[in-house]
Length: 205
Image 1 (cartoon, rainbow, N blue to C red):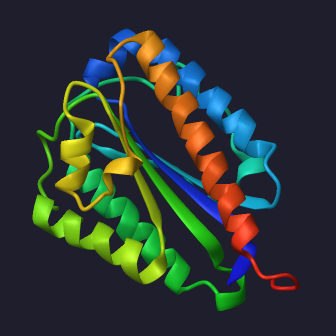
Image 2 (image 1 turned 60 degrees about the vertical axis):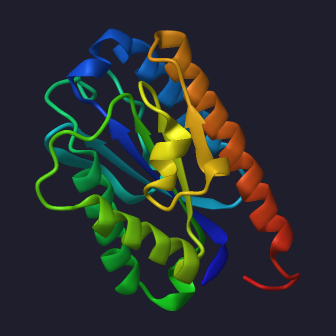
């Protein structure tokens, strides 16, 4: 694998309840994206937006080519099929990476999930199924999985999906809250990226 390559995958809730904080969610995401573009190394970026539907905006794209969100590309609507979004994202990334030459696979994958509500619309993936998938990616492939949530206990919800409590962030369901969530996510990912760079043996790609 390429230790200088990191893939960041963001699964972001755009259900109807996000409407009241839409502009701040867009601004917070765009600030996060801008900062990640400045980080050392090569970054691939996957972005999934979900409500009761599932939209892959970017799939392993060079982060430098990823455009900001706006009110046209991020329009809150519908209900919250959280489990389906997580499950499909893991399956899609896993399939793509399995078809990628070993030398081109990222040395680190970071999956970040942000939602302002609880699951209420999934039809394909169950909590048990998603929990097993997340555990597998963390233990077998060393993925870092993060869970940011409002209107629920993020730590408890993360635990139910096998996500470590230290990877869970609660945020207020407000404009300031969602901006804080993206700021915290940015700082956390930067720390993880730095730790990953520091752990790489000298001379190893």
